[in-house]
Image 1 (cartoon, one colour):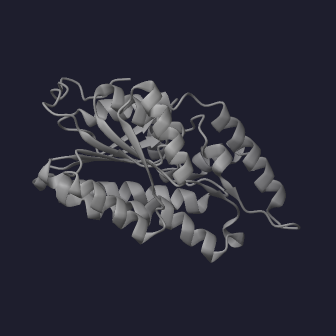
Image 2: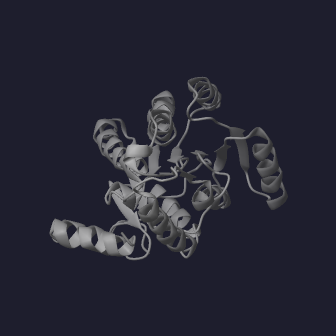
Amino acid sequence: MSGRAPGEPPMNQPDRPRNTLVTGAGSGIGLATADRLARRGDRVTGTVRDQARARALAERARDSGLDVRYRALELSSSDSITALADELNLAGGLDLLVHNAGYGVLGAVEEIDPATADRQFAVNLLGPLELTTRLLPGLRERRGHIIWIGSLAGRFAMPFQAHYSATKAAVASVSDALRLELAPHGVRVTCLEPGDFATGFTDARRIVRREGSLYLDALERCLGAVDRQERGGPSPDWVARVVERVSQMRNPPARRPVGRGARTLCLLQRLLPDRVRERGVRVNYRL
């Protein structure tokens, strides 16, 4: 898969290592991205939620000869966000910010309680947005790049994953708006939209079930289909390669679907009538 537009040369290697932050770097796409960018020569900071996990990953990076340091970050905590942003700004700011942290909630819209919904939006959207605003002075100074890891779910609202789909649709919209606002200041912004990949996301998903629910049978069938598709997906290294390539482009795309058939699905979404598209979703998720 090519990481640049036809005829567009890659950016030259920088004279200095890039300062890079990858959130959600403890496993899956985030870990693969942090490793790949460190091998490229970036000075990478990766975030995870747990301090013990951060120490274990830092030791792993040292043993592998990778320039990756790990920090604990709780995206639902403004204090945690401020502390990390202050540390990075004092160290000179960022050249590249990769927003990967997030998780999924699966359940019927009617049965998701407000606290669960609030946390889904805090971690997937509002926390990353606050972190971005606190890091923007350094990104402007270094003419940096922000890459959001969105999801095809932001284009295709998935049954029993309404809140997750909504956060990813919002991420793409925020990315598009920031791209326009920051272009005059030399900051590039891109949203990558992966499909199904084999990562820790599947096991970390929060599932909301209610005994006796009208939705329970359909939810379980949908969950089974989702699990099979994700666990059978390609390696997250695919997404990491795209992050690396896009991060070196002078004129990166606003959005880039990533994964098996991802671009074809996006094309079909635009072309097919609603009834045909919805029939395909029902068949795919056994509804």
